Image (cartoon, rainbow, N blue to C red; front, side, top):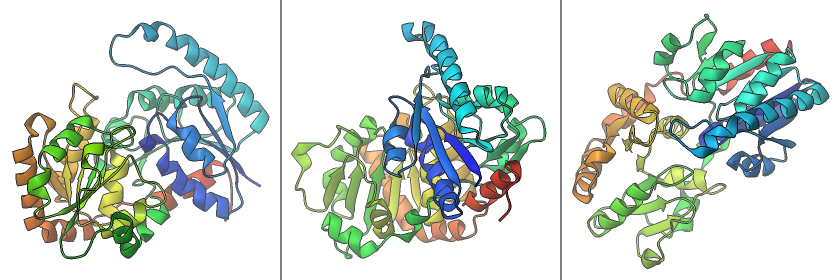
Length: 357
């Protein structure tokens, strides 16, 4: 039996793509383990899958001044030691990393243990954790063809993003029942990412009276951001987030308003959903979502509304334009290539682990 260790965490985008690969390797009899952070979202997500989870210490890789920056390098060093001992005990045939700050100690420990390493980068340019890890990787999988030029050493391959199978198998009628919606008005999904998006939340609610004249709205507003003042409003349903019911809600959705994290937007693309993307600003991020959104706009999959221009009026206008042209975006989505990278990545994993089908 072949054994693999997965790592990645900090946000859902560094965890959920792993689930697509895990599901298929499980069916093929692999022994699957996961190394993550003690406090990260990955512990809850992986725990729900029944995968053995091993927590380690890890420092957060911040791009701004914080007094925690002084102690975090010591946490990373401690995490390397913990990961090194874990890997010596687990003896995996290959390590697969989805990035995020917890992955750095695991990658370093894997290299010290001479275990083959495969990294996946979702965004167009590598995040800080993956930038640190790239020199130690044997293979680097990327989502965007434009990413290949950013990876040195002839070890990058454009596989696409691993997409969870069940996301593609939702039942629209179940989604309608969950939200108490009907089929007479188009349905708009507003999604701010696993950590929520307060700016988007507030503008959507400011525009609600106008939007509800034309749309039904399901709003995934993030943990702690459900507004009780809007509960029970006809045609408007709020959830902190959705897990098991998300495929059904996606199946009934006609249009999406979302941040531009790679995991979410590639899932929307696979489902042929027209997108209005509101990327995180450069002040709030490293600019990766702006690049992701720009690529999708240039390919004709959706439109961008920059947060600096986000008001109730601009949101209403942008959604209306998206709705008017939705058939154009759906046609472009049908032509898309390199969407679901699960099978391509599994081939690379098997090659690294010297496994046969």
